[in-house]
Length: 246
Image 1 (cartoon, rainbow, N blue to C red):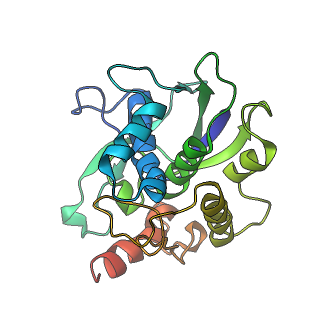
Image 2: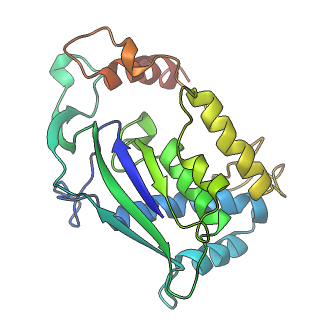
């Protein structure tokens, strides 16, 4: 499966030493994010059974004694451009400190393939990928909207990913974000039923009543400050008014 991914908000991604900016989008960073969201998916099935969660995750993503059932590869076509962006754009100017990031509005390709000998990608992994791409991100401050990605195109042989599942990776023409997310979550409820949704978990599980998905009303096109990137203008009210008020 090949996913063409657009960077919608800057990615502050560290290199292997965690002190400098990575020169490429690193596969270990992607695997780490997919593992996080895979736990949120698998938790729907195993509830608060940590041992069962660990076993299910390791069976799919691998561990020190066994290789992963899936491989990830990043192909960029050309080096990604970097730019100085603010980690805290809602602060007053005197508190703003720019950092180098992979700039928004450019794309790279992610290839996700089963291990040799396997043909299909499991629904559990597809669900984790969909949640990561639409609810997560890469790098620093993903919980504040940075490092966000959008799938522009998804292709795969039918025996690897069925057409109905492949269609979940891209929004339809004119489809609103709430409708698109609703389509993904409806499929998730059917593909990975939440057998232990009522149990309060010790770790994040994407299941009612343990999680909520919020959509910010302002869009990128509604920015009011011509000197600021449009994504900042859309997210500042969320950072300032909702997160701090909550």
